[in-house]
Image (cartoon, rainbow, N blue to C red; front, side, top):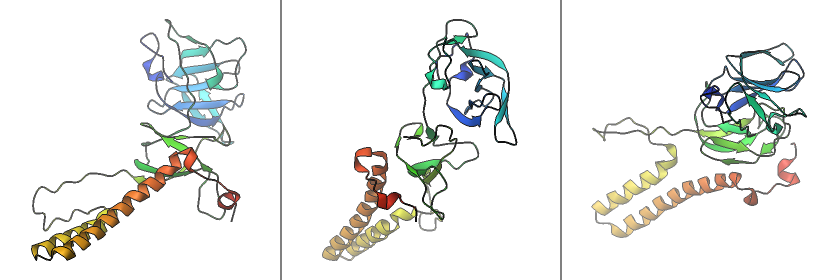
Length: 248
């Protein structure tokens, strides 16, 4: 969501997460990801964006909103059920024009979660248990994974198979006795490349060339794994059949 300036609260400009249904009216309640006191909800007559607001989950898993300071309110004559369908918002003051863009985004970083380095697969439900789960297509941008073709617009979670973000390391001295761990993906490549250098020191050039080729093969295999995972982000390279989608 964007468009708020000095005449309204700039905290409105951020990504939002779907909390669930509103106890009043049943329409969705959204909470700001960066500033969680910004709430988007429907009053029963119009969509409204409030700062200094809160949403409390009830026993039936709906959310009750405590209103805050209104920043924008729906101005459409024919009221909409979905926030993304609203054409015009009236600002609290000034002439701000609010832009609401619908995204099903899985960010790299979330509070209380491990930072994601690479997205591998995304499922609707917890995968790899007793039954299969619907797997989502997605593409990755600067903000995270954009999930395509959500099964139900009321879904407020997805389950990601991922690799953790790589933390770069440096060794400035005492390379021989360093205990810094090398990523496992590069173990075979490094081991064979070092052995190739050892063979060159002994002037065993032919064996060194052969060993170097083995090292390059291991490196190519690791890079190929990245290419395979990238196919998850490209629709025209992904094939779905009844065999790989059925429950087992």
